[in-house]
Length: 379
Image (cartoon, rainbow, N blue to C red; front, side, top):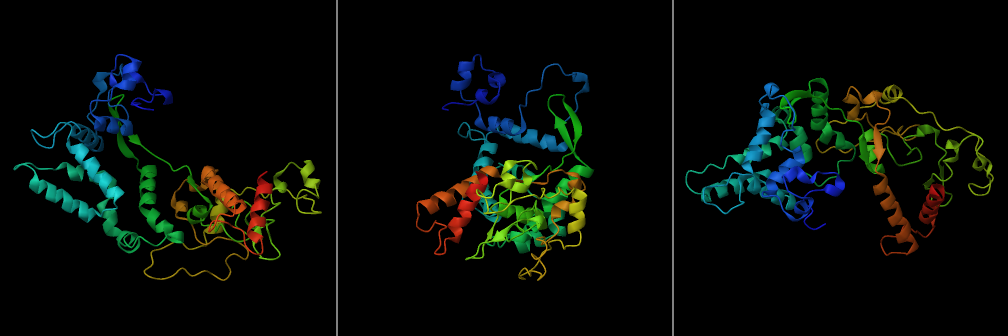
């Protein structure tokens, strides 16, 4: 929507910019869009009416840093510069360039130093580290676990696959700190500091990423992380590919008519078995506790055990089990349904339309048969 500065259709109040009418809210751009950017990210900076001013507290250092950034949106880079060119606007645009063109931090530091050389004499562009610091990892972690950044992150082109846990180590450390110690935060509505704690509820990913996050390999006959070794998957005769067609009837009520259907599903097959039991977090933890955790490696390929994928699909103990509350969650990993549906739709349409280079049809027709089997299962 053009000039849609206040999201009234999404629940925002058009009075947030002190406009006199709702019409003004749709036609008047905020005076400084960078102030609006910070406000959108952290919430309205105006205090709510009715709080007790006697109980006001000074913001803690981290909150103070935020207010310093907010103030920077109004501060010109130097006296007499073009209107609207604030310290925050320059830092934001530099960060945008860094992201768009994948510039290194060393390159950005050089650009910042060069720009400072061309600014009026006596000017000190000191906001650059203030903007960047909140997004950097703690220096003590970088020093203590330097391999995470030098050995794994710097090369970059290789897909992390099962080494994803190495990337997640800084995140897990912060999550544990947020659970045990918490972090001091500032409530703008009450003007008081408080201790903020946080918990990771679940992950959301597609099916291949599910394997990297959970430690259960999502290919092969035992690909289903719910059925585990209780799966009814079978292999197609010609291509020997695994098919999960007709693996869903066990989830139906015991008196459901489709359980006795010997025509619409696998020919002559009646399903009497009940659904596999839902394992608790404690039971899952007991199963994976004997498997190794992912560790940093230098140039060594991943070696698969010959026993893996015969009776189970576990390939590692996920780093998420280090979180003290992970085992009590009822749901730890979610699938991104929209992403999966899009991929599934693309495969079906490209195969039916015989799109060159995109079709799943093969000479033995196993791929198309597998897709049709999945489609029948979903229907």
